[in-house]
Length: 544
Ligand code: G4P
Image (cartoon, rainbow, N blue to C red; front, side, top):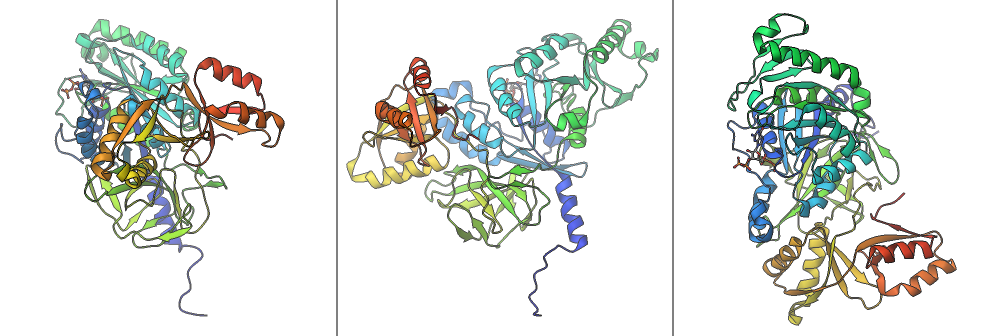
C-alpha cells in the first residue's frame, strides 16, 4: 500500500459539491433573425444578473446590413465577437452561460455548430415581422435535436400582429407546439402590460428601459373587479376573453414535455424597454435544463460522470494576427476541467496540458482553475485543434453532432504566387479547421474547391490568407448546385463501381477524406439518385 492511491470514487462531500455545480448550470443560446432583438435581450438579461451596470455595454457583434459587402467591417467585428462568444452571469444562484449565435446568414454554420453546445435555446421573434427565414432554419436544427426551446415575442411596444395569429404562425411555420406563459394586454400604442400566466400576476408597462426591478401586482383571480380599475373596463374584458381562449386552446404547461422538446412556452415583452424580460428569465432559470447527456460515437456520456470530457465547437482566430493566436472553445460535457492537468486529445492520441484556460464572465475572460459541465473554456491554441475535436481524461470518445452541411457557393482556388505555395496550403488548412469554409479535392485532377455558405467568406479567406499567411489566391467559378456526402450500401458492388466511374468528374473528397458528389443541378442530383438507388446521397456529412 503506497501513499499515492488515487481514489476511484470522489469523497461524498466533493461529489455533492460537484452535483450541485452541475445543477446550477444553464447553458443556452438565443436564436433569431437579424434585428429581432437578440442583442438587446442579451443585454437586458446581463443587467438582471448584475453582470453589467448600464444598457449599451454589450456591443452588438452583428454585421450591419450595410456591411454585407464590406469585409473589413467583419474583421473589425471579429474582435468584438470574441468578447461576446460566451457571456456568463449568476442569477438566483444559477450560473447562466449564453453562447453567441450569429444571426447573419453567411455565418449560419457557426450558429449550427454552436447549437451543438447549448442545452436549451430562447427564440426571439419580432411581433411585427413574425417568423422570419433565419429563425425557421435555426429552429429546424433545434427541433431535430429535441433541444428545449422557449419563445420570446419581442417589441410589443410597437404595433404588430395579433397575439393569437402569431402563436398560429409559430406553430405552423416552425412546427412547434406552443403554450403561452404570459399574455399581452394591448399592443403598440395601447400596450398596457403583461399578464404572467406562469406566476399569475400583472406587470404594468411604464416604458422605462432603465428600471431594473419591475413592480408586479398579484392577480390570481381575474374576476376580481380591481382589474377594471387597473387596466380599464375594455382591456379587462378583452384580457379575460383572451385568457379563456388560451386556456381552452393551448395545452397546460408541462415541464417534461418542454424538456423533451415537445412543448414550447411563449412569453411576450419588449426587450428595449426591459419589459417582460424578468418573467422570461425567472421562468427560464426554473425550467431550463442543466447540462444534458451527450452522445459520443461510443456511448452516451452523462454530465455527472467523474471523468472529464468535452469537445471543441468553435475556434476563434486572429486575435493577434502577428501570432496567429487562436482560441478553441470547449464545451465541458462531463467531469471537471482543471488547469495544468494533462488531457487526451483523442484525434492526435496525445496528452495536452493547459496552463491558462480562460473562463468567461460577463464580457471578460479570465484564467480559471476548475470548470464544470455546462461551462465553456477557451484554450489558447497554435493549430492543434479543429472543430469537433474531443478532449478527455483518457477515454477514447468521439462526440457526434458537428456535421458539415452542403455549402451554397463553390469556387476553385488557385495559387497566385508560386513562391508561396506552402504558406497557401497551410493557411487554407488552418482556416478550414476553424470552420470558415469547406475544402473539396476533385478526384479527377486533384484541384481544390472551396465551398462556403455566403459569398462574403471568399473575400474574408483571401484577405486572411494574405495578411496572416503571406499567400495570395485567386478564384474561378465552379457551378455546383449541392455537395452531397456519399454512402455506399456496399463499396464492392457493381452499381457503386459504375457510379464512381461514370460520375468521376463530379466526385471529390472532403477534408476528412469522405467521398462527396458535387451535383451541378437539382435535375442531375435527382437523376443520379434514381439511377443508383444503392448509393445514398446525404446533405450533411454525418449520417446514422
Ligand atoms: P439583433 O441582435 O437580433 O440583430 O437585434 P438588436 O437587439 O440589435 O435589435 C435590432 C433593433 O431593434 C435595434 O434598433 C433595437 O434597438 C430594436 N429593438 C430591440 N428590442 C426592441 C423592443 O422591444 N422594442 C422596440 N421598439 N425596438 C426594439 P436599431 O435602430 O436597429 O439599432 P440601435 O441603433 O437602436 O442600436
